Length: 145
Image (tube, rainbow, N blue to C red; front, top):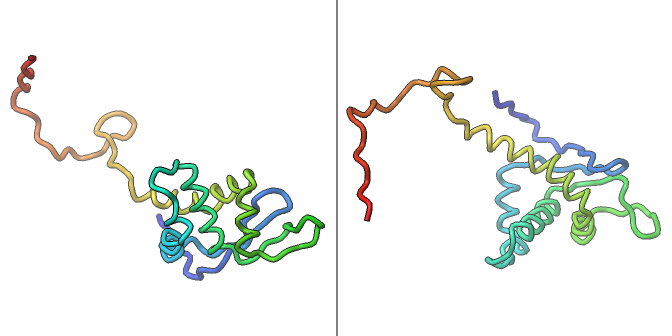
């Protein structure tokens, strides 16, 4: 069952020990805005999937991050999130991976839920109804040249 959160309130996500970010809900509007971000649109057509993923994650984070804790400058002073700081944060591999797993994957898992296939008529998923009629006779073998 799909559970709707009608509050649409921001949530805190722990990315690594001592670092957490408050993020907007991953909505359709946020994803559409991310796709039309100039940095995402500027990714060359021949770019690798990894380059696309980084550009998309940075653009999404710039739109989604509202606040954070445990992030500071080189002198150890707490800093507020801003476009440059968010991009720098996403350049840290464990942070990028945690962002993808704890935030982006939530939307992807929901996307997968709607792509469910019917149970197989045999095996562990017995129960699907056959929709095709059985063939009357076997197909002829294709000609070989």
